[in-house]
Image (cartoon, rainbow over all chains, first blue to last red; front, top):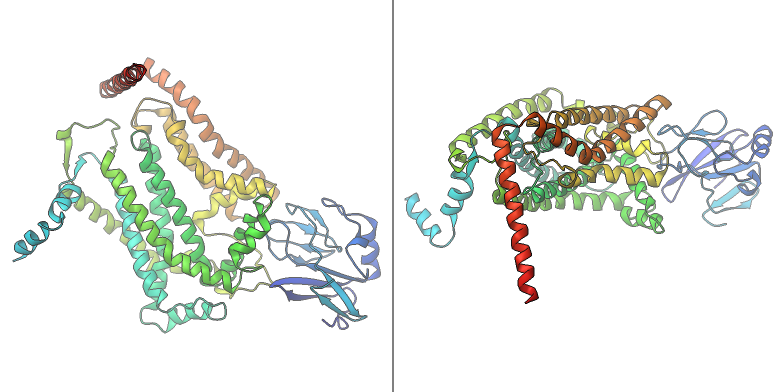
Length: 118
Length: 421
């Protein structure tokens, strides 16, 4: 899909395999904040979760019971049971056990990504 | 004329003898209270649900593009479709209310004890079938709550060790709850009530073998049984009238009070409503599920919470019959358990905060604790009550039961002796 029209700090949600996929165009501040820690409950360095640090692509399904979290402040909040995720999609709080899943995707051009094939 | 037809049938089929033996002339304890009406009411609601359900199925479309609109079509265009729909949705709640009261009666009066264990377990099986049927039926209107409730609950099967993720996809028919899920849930929702009917027949055969218990807890003498007709047909129809009044108030004056407002929004897989909540009859079990921070633990706890009832015949070690009638501590336990269910229901309904989570966890511990403490409390209570003095009827009953056990043991011992020859 074409990601050229997502502004920095903006997010787009597309459907893939019937599930929502969040595509977040991260600002330099967000990239720096994501790099400072490895996440709380499921440690994983930010660099392992993105191909290009400016773009975060994660499946928008809470790893707890499957609700769709809402973009709120830094990261996402799942209103079902209060799980919170940071701007790298890593779980920072609440009953969710794992970070948001990163789907297989690749950049076919500088402003186009294909989800489904790494 | 009708006598000749009846005679003709009787020569070929045990119609008259069956009706006399199992229905009109069936011996029933004369002291059954209104708490014994609820089995009949459950059967009535089953018939109501099947009838309204079949007529709804004539107009409903099980396709994700059409389902929500087909329900609106039923509500607006189909003659009396609104009545069918509201009767069916209210009927589901009524079914669970009746069943919960029916179970409460059984727990209170100890009607699950020997020789009625199979009666209790077939009832347990019926409860599970009913919960499955209700869960699948709730997806059919394809509203926001329908979709997300189905998503969350089918996700739970992912807790299965090793094959969890594959089980979830197999169950749904797709990676997410979608058209495949809706079609199969419709097919199964149509099927399960007929399995329930079969299980009800088994339940009634078990009942007619051991006969009803009664509020006094003592086996009544044969002379204290009265024919089911006209006494209990009259009592059942009276109870039915009261039930129908309450039911009709909901169907005609407040039908939407039992329908979640979020379910009037068509399902949107991209957006979860802020507050997912199951129907009221699932709330306590949902609260138990959420109380355990670990996903597998939560699923196990929820499953166990439904199955715990099945262990009651083994957990209750007191030889005093009649349940709570003669046992004040058991009665207290029963009321505390009811209170705990209400607390759990509340916790299941409200959005989770750290306080409600704590209350929920305490309530879950009390829930399982009640069951685990029954063996110890029942034995201690029996000793205390025997010391305090029991009514003569109970003493006679316990002595005769003890004699029966001794006789049986002796027979087994002698039979074993014969085998050694």
